[in-house]
Image (cartoon, rainbow, N blue to C red):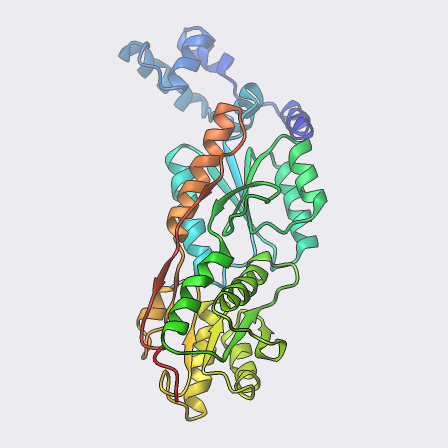
Length: 348
């Protein structure tokens, strides 16, 4: 953060503009009184306030936020680096994050990494250079340099969309592995034993890996397994999911679990294009509970992720840590199974 403040000093020193001293001289008051008006103090008499405001208008004075930041050594800016906005679940979480930050007087800087950890590291460095006081990341897999830079700059940070007691940073989110257990239990109760998975790309994505691990661990709990040929990794894309669905079906599963709802949409559309009946011929599950998932026919059985609550909690936790000069506190949020029309009894 020190580099940020030095950079601001150089910028401000190169400018000559109307200052509070000029306003005070024009209004015939002290600079302290001008400062009180700018800070909304109730101690200034109405007639004095009007005289100062008139002076500011006559001089075209605009309070320089950069100077204020420099004086207080506070930017009141939070940052968020997320994988993409193409997935509505991230958009929902970031919207809630921004609303909560705005309500407490903070501004949000947003960047997209496109699931590239090297690009994410560059974006985090730029966020630090721009003076963010708190930073939101997605998931727990990030470069060591990313965490080292945040700690060296004393920037409060947390990771959302995941929760693990072994995480290298504070977590406000949910266990992706545990969230899959409810889906597995649901399918097993319906009599499914041969289960396949269209997973997200697991490289550099701990959430996708944990979802695969969660399925395998819960199947093992029921005395079942999911061999390697029944797991196909695909990008979070309807088109890519449609391309991959025939390959997973050649392994003859009675149910296909998908890494998120977007993949589940592709699986459902391709199943219907192949002449398969869902769920009579094959059951399909998603993850995230996007709004469209309840509107399709049949509706997608999925896991509800508390994206809005997570975004709000993350913003407040970061601000509390910044203003209290303390570490961010972790919190685990619940997920919930939403059983709909894409799951049914296993075919005999």
